[in-house]
Length: 76
Image (tube, rainbow, N blue to C red; front, side, top):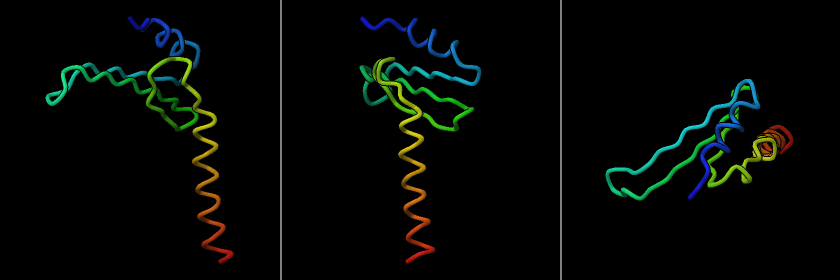
């Protein structure tokens, strides 16, 4: 059984953090979705455990993709 208190503690450690936990859906009653988001960073991530949360790396990867797209656009 997963300890959901770990997500509560993660959320409390940051001023702008948010956690959404969804249990079940019309098509799959066993579905379990955890979404974490940091409004300060402007980035979120779907995870299965607190240990998977790495919003900074997710943000860096997004910024790198945007940079490469802009570089290609303006430098050809």
